[in-house]
Length: 184
Length: 184
Image 1 (cartoon, chains in turn red, green):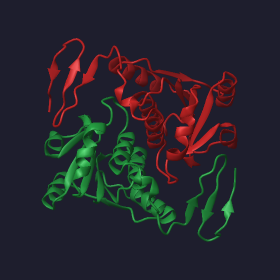
Image 2 (cartoon, chains in turn red, green; image 1 turned 180 degrees about the horizontal axis):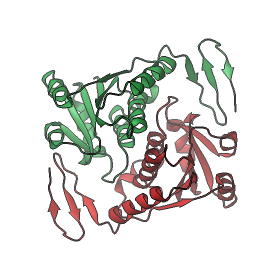
Image 3 (cartoon, chains in turn blue, brown; image 1 turned 90 degrees about the vertical axis):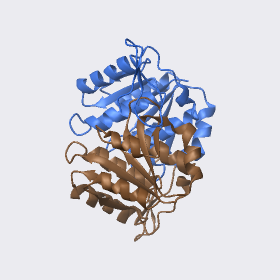
Image 4 (cartoon, chains in turn orange, cyan; image 1 turned 90 degrees about the horizontal axis):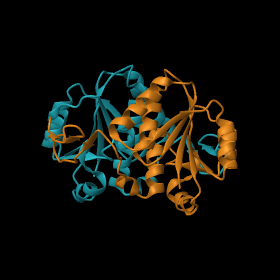
């Protein structure tokens, strides 16, 4: 099962940091690709590719102008669509059912105003609590619930940097030096 | 066990949206208070209080100029400190141990550069994956893991608005109209 994330309605200045967090969260929690819609934003795409280069793995980032056609094509190709919204069915109740199907999943993360087509055409509208908070939090919790914690075991291959978890301080392995740095 | 969140090094313009997401995520996932440090930012505090007014519960927001003194005082009062950092011990391994103590918890969420004092003086440095992503995602996953899903059952009392989870569309109960709105 491949999981991609579609970020709707990105606005270049206003959303730069939130969208970057959406992209990096998608990568860290096991999605294989993020697709941005809205404004084209080369800087974000470069930043995300730079993270992949340094921190490893095969995560991809792409842009699509017409998100509606992208969703239609995803469904035509046999994939399923999950829209994260505070109005949807509770993540803790519905994700077990979503997980039963091994079809590829497109997780749609909205911007400020999500057209009703997204609500109607998604196979599932999923809420992570019914409170206002953050698309970044919703995405991380949904992917964590979908993958059931297995995302913690992902080995991001070919990284230049690797962290060694530690109680107090920072330990980083670098590919080239192949030694520990402890700079705190 | 009371859980508060301390947001370090808030910068008024650059961090406005991320810090807002940190605050709302803290609230939605069961923290009782967020304390901002760095720039003073009345607008964020008003926005968060407005969310509490409309969506219910007793969540509070406050500001402290000296985060180091705040942490010292928290510890002097018998509370424990958890710092979320990609360099820390894995959330899936350490949270069970953290949960064993019923002492009040201060969850510290960093800005761009976190002083080494935070790493040293925290009872636990906790990582949510060892990959770069988002303090918003890290906070939601940590609180979700700490509360073990019980945060989904929080009843945010005295709200003006309440969402009825639904498969397709939007259903909102309002306190005053006491009727369903279905606007999608």
